[in-house]
Image (cartoon, rainbow, N blue to C red):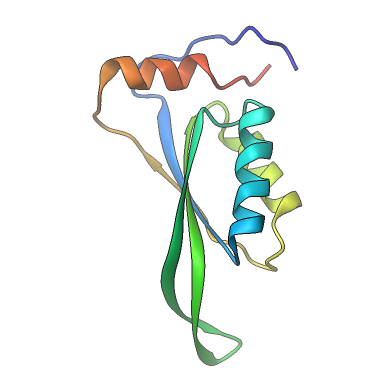
Length: 116
């Protein structure tokens, strides 16, 4: 992949949430996304409690949450990579627009995500 990234404009950034079954999977996904320049940064938040319905039954599990910073242009490839690498049948992958934040940080995100 090209080391030169085309910067995105302010307001084109996303935070993506993705839950993982354990720290090992979370580490693998985070490293893959940053190495492939699909994400500028991935935070790994250990030991969250998830309560959800699966196949008609209420489940409670301890999971690991990834908060992924990327761009709207990088979203498609990032989602595809998560779907390919994730062990869950139906992984939680939710993207939210970043509507405000430290301008320098958001510019850095755009400079460190490549879609070429």
